[in-house]
Image (cartoon, rainbow, N blue to C red):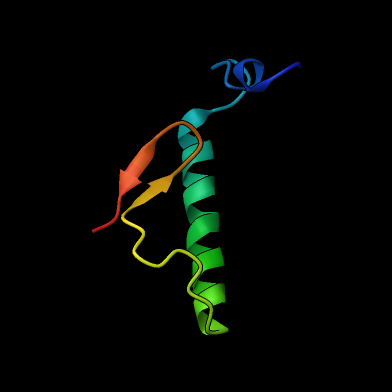
Length: 57
């Protein structure tokens, strides 16, 4: 595989599951950092996932 275009081929990854996995990891990572007193993305209103972006409520 030479670049991300090859990796985003629908036959290679299930994009719905990849988006869920990235979102779950980001939530876990952000919660862990907040627990230690680090606000890594202050004012963040959107999350970039595998192949989409979602707005934060």
